[in-house]
Length: 387
Image (tube, rainbow, N blue to C red; front, top):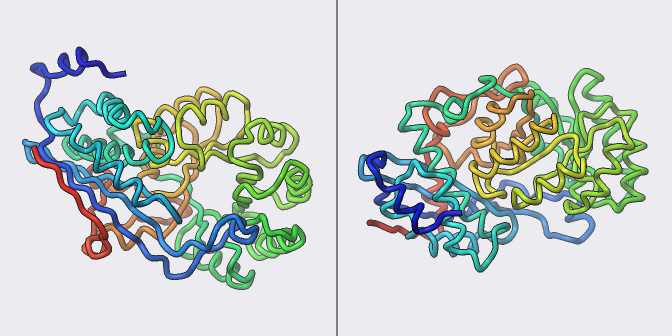
């Protein structure tokens, strides 16, 4: 961790720039239709009607700028913004290139609330902005700054397969997604009636045919006996993976499923630290790891998870936030998947190119996105710090 001595040592001849301003925005993104997955049908959560976004825009004395974001669904957005507002002054006067040290500094600025969950999700917005700034200063897409293994990644769509949608609508949206260039389809399962789940999966598999990648996501809704039964019944559908069949923190249960069934088990999206992912990977609890950069604390922490997954020869399929994850997935040694959600499209002036079943890394520097005027209009709170 950073100490006063190491902070002082960082201010030498190699420090070529300084952070002079940080602007925070809390943006409420409305969803066109209330969204329900298994957590709603089982009474654990209410339908999702909006996404709370936390944007951080960082500027330097040399005129460079970076933008980053984090997010929260259903609850937590105001808390993320409040925490980010408290710790933002710690960045003023710092060298924006010292990203790892600044991550430590920001976490220690709010250490009394821990090093996972909401606190690091607030830090994530700053961390992503610093990586965006660094890549822009280099004139490179973030994937190229990190060292890309490919210029495009396989992508699949989730947003058309939620449980609130009738199966006929799911089939129509799957057809539309494939026609738009998407490479695979994921649908939600975890319905209280397992027969409904199996009928929906069978209908989608028949509609798609055998050659189209199909995934299912139970959103943590099964207990161990139900998960074993469902994984056994789902084997016949040649799925790419079964996602979150158990509670996100039941690593031992996931490990048992991973060893018992041919269909790969995917999980990790709900974990909020590198340490939690390390335990998941250590126990062999996933064939496919699904970290979420905003949830684990940003790109700096995501890269640590990537290294752990690579060391164990695991597959990677980052959760949500495709504007960030397309770059990170492109830098993973093994062919990954990236999740396509069009929900965030209105927040940015640029959109990702998708064709041939793949999401393409743009040639624009950094993340390759700028905050739209619509996002500005949806802003519910602002805060600015200047040096």
